[in-house]
Image (cartoon, rainbow, N blue to C red):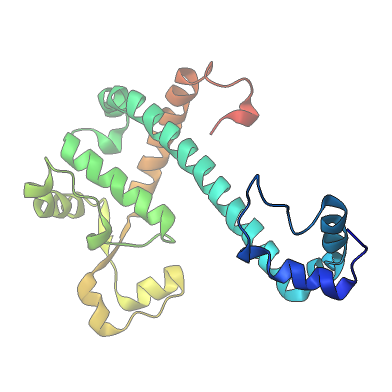
Length: 215
């Protein structure tokens, strides 16, 4: 086979799809010609194209977010399992905290739920955000009102919401009712959290090689 011009090689490359690979048919390009065709592709120019670089960067970021999300998801699940394993024990010893003494499991669960939401929402939460467990759902409103009556939770005005979070709440949205934990309740939960931390640390002491690997 004689030496072909670049124009001929380009024509053959364009029409490769029209041929079927077969043991009985000779390939339209030999290895040397195929290498020449590949060398004609301006890869540096393509890779340095702003659109290509942007697309590659976005794909890498997407893959990185997926990897991080999977890792954080597993760590969160692991943390949740460990918390669940020590939580019942803490229910029994929470009576040592004066402010929590006498609360039923329903009241205690709901109060901890309120505290978690407050930490995630700048100190303020809405009643609609609370998780209603299946067993407490029937009595949830009564349980929440009890916590207010005990002086653990207080409802906020629009100006109080703004003072705490900086958010401007239109008057018509106050029907959602914003709440926060009282100062005394915050101190009580802090005391409970210290107790929780000690029990959790003892429980998980041998789960990781070093403190840096703890959740």
